[in-house]
Amino acid sequence: MQLQGLHVLVVGLGKTGQAAVRFFLQHDARVSVSETAPKSSIAPEVITWLAENNIVCETGGHSLDLFTAADLIFVSPGIPLTIEPLAAARRRNIPITGELAVAAAFMRTPVIAVTGTNGKTTVTTLLGDIFQAASKKVFVGGNIGTPLLEYLAGVQDADFVVAEISSFQLDTGGSHKGLPFKTAILLNITPDHLERYASFAAYVDSKFTIFAAQGPDDYAVLNADDAEIMKRRNLWPASQKYFFGEKLADLAGASIQGSAIHLKNSSSASLPDNMHGEVYELDATALKNPPNLQNAAAAILGARLMGCRQQDINKGLSSFKPLSHRMTLVAEIGGVSYIDDSKATNVGAVYSALAAQQQPVILIAGGRDKGGDYSVLAEPVRNKVRHMLLIGEAKDTMARAFMAFTNVEVFDTLQEAVSRAARLAVPGDTVLLSPACASFDMFSSYAERGDVFRKSVLGLLRNHAGSPKEASVH
Image (cartoon, rainbow, N blue to C red):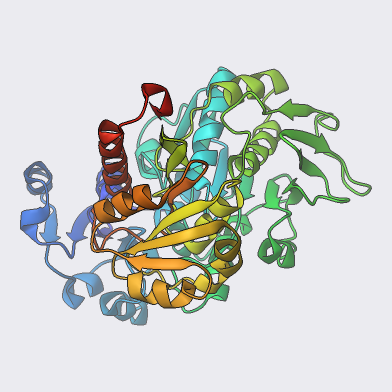
């Protein structure tokens, strides 16, 4: 990819957009920026830096003139690909690219990539911990933390790159199949981001392009328990395919048996490096319960395929600390567990959260609807949820969807829902925040939503009149 002298328009000035500006400047391109947010919302130091580098930056919207004057358009992951300025650029045959397409031209380090509707950040972080336990220099980034372009702008001195990859990034992977991942992991697929995609099938198609550039020496790791994945597992036939899950049958990969992961061959395929027969016990780790059991199986298989030794993987598994707002136990008060699963922004994540519960649940859900099919949750709600307390823009829609299956109430604030949950709960119950919706109607992020939940629960703890032994913070 020759960039010198090109007029490159960077669309979106978030973390990835800023990294793109720096990268293209480093390669002697002439850079412009287009951002929908008003200038007042952009950090002053960013505005100053753009001016110092003579970068034209339009704010408050996208203009056709700037888009159609570019030689190359770089689109940040959150930008809808259907906006009219991009359509106008396509009509003029102006190339439109994204982070993965650029990485395909400049990446010199082996990459293990992780995608899926849920669990991406956990598996990506866990893989990073495993590589560090193996004394490998690793860059962890992509859709989390640091953009890949920041690594590409440096000396690229890592042994491995572990990249979380979103469907939005895959959508701009390039017309030449994009970055070839040495190992690509597809964790699961359930309906999500349907406000962006024309259909669930289009979203699934996007996820599967993670395998598009792989060759016969590369590895694909797929969830054998996911029916949607198994229907399409031969879509990209070039790579070597291995599987993880409880239903491996005669498939090679990582078999979940209780709280242990067993690596196994099949009658037609053998794992490399004599992995067959290795057993990883997770009972003493933070990964022993679903959905982290599935996440661990995927990470173990991915790390072994990238050359990590069993003892180093075990070290990484033992030291791993679960990420915040993902099935995080906040407190136990009077025999009631309070769990923060604010990151569960789609129905698939809530399905997994309920599947992991052995106790009766009081479920706090709702927020901004993402187009998911709530009927997927009908059976687990009927079987496990005693009360459903709903908040946010979707509360009335969700109330209609679930009122036939459990007791439903609606509230204006999360704090009110937590207070009501505490009054309803009896010893042995779990109060679970698992929204099935985005947070942006009421909060700046899922993290803020989880923090408000935690603060509300800790308020209950301070007001708890029982013995100190009856209450604990985690």
